[in-house]
Length: 363
Picture 1 (cartoon, helix red, strand yellow):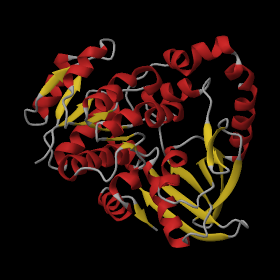
Picture 2: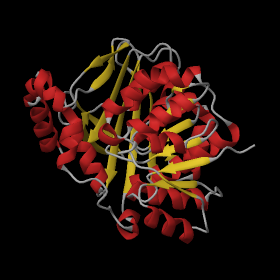
Picture 3: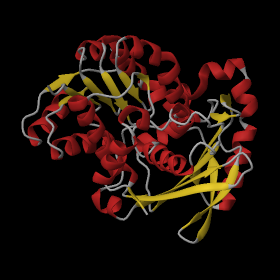
């Protein structure tokens, strides 16, 4: 039996793209949003879909919308500010959950705060199930599989080209400025500010620079590769920008350590930037691509395997992979429970096939 798919935030930028992708892939989702008029219009346009009105300002409305056995997709960001009602409803009521966040602190909350409740209720929580950070998880898992048990470290680099950010993405970035980052170091999850590390990758014959950031790879990859001791996640930026970002996050360290300012944190910073203000149109997205590089290394630092993958515009990929993941969870279920990385949830072969279906392929 196919479970009911709920799409929360259906009238936002990413939510709208995801709703259309779900319908293209054969699903009939229930569209959930705060405006009855807007969600009704979208539902009519997409063939007469069912709708529910719910708003994070009234968390009980979100909770009441979810039923045991559902599959819930949340695209309501910034997630540090708006994300908790949806993941709480899924974890406590027994609904598989996927979201589109790119916010490291929220990802960690999904795993550590809500993962145990999800495991008790027999369901899985898949945070950051989009451009951030499915491609890196897949590329790294393929590299680790090629390298075998001698691999103890893996680095992944994200290199988008022609990418324009949406209002929601800008708000998410603002929200993370006063939040601690993290990384998987020496076999454990440790606090590490974003931008602390820089490294270069060979991308199609060019040497490109990336700066470190917290990603779901730090949370999900150790579960599938027991010998793993180090995980690095890097976002490609020009070398000059890499130096500026590293310096700016270093300067913000005293602010993050201040108890008073941490009380404000990213949730307050996110309020300074509007969220759902739209994003790149279809023509702009058609000119955007991304490349992923993953390197698996031995204890001596020798590179044992390298995997390069290419894919479409990050927003198109996010919408399509969210739809694919929700449909797979609704029809076949997940392979594990609790807070999950994408490989642990679906298996490497199935995830690779799903990503290929939506345009992310090994080069």
